[in-house]
Image 1: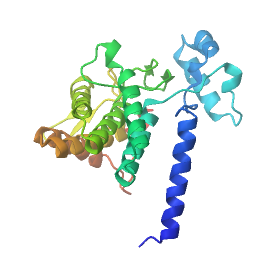
Image 2: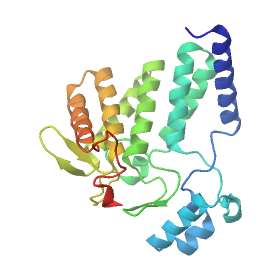
Image 3: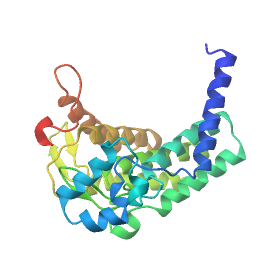
Image 4: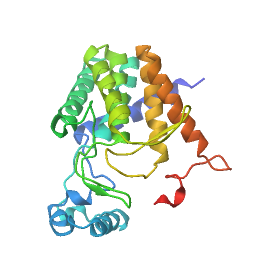
Length: 259
């Protein structure tokens, strides 16, 4: 059992973190946001190698170069999704009007920043608040991907379970359409399936996205009763398990030499 004193300390810490985040408008720098610099985007944005060098330089140098290059703090949809889930957990313990208002405000922000509203994608989807380059592909600002979409979709699912607003469940179901129909299938058989990170023609198999999307689909199945989601979740998780190492760990990609 947790003592009352420890519980009070945990609650106090949580409330201070949430108050700080709200005061900062849930905005900050991100790990790979260097190309939010108008200067770097203009000078280096045309070349994949230069984009990669710019991102890693700003990320790795132990000084904050973002102010120098004019990078502004901004909201990351994936981060907002995590705050929504935290606020929903808080609301179940502390059902106050101000907590509910914050959940509704952040879910509305996610709705306003859906990538499919302007990109012509099937289903609700989201991307990072910055353009980024990795060795496998380039993604423009807010270009949707599996990981951000899964986090945001799960946030709407959690918000539905907490506030019972039907529109939140509809958005989570819509996001499943993007995850299951828009992303490329890189490998599959009757029992296993591996999907791609982004809506693009690439063969890079990123391991963690299959586990994260599988987890979301399993939860969606539990809420909706739709067994098709559970079947797809099982296939994604089965593939993830199949590519673990002999010491029960995973590389970021499969095979690990892909990057």
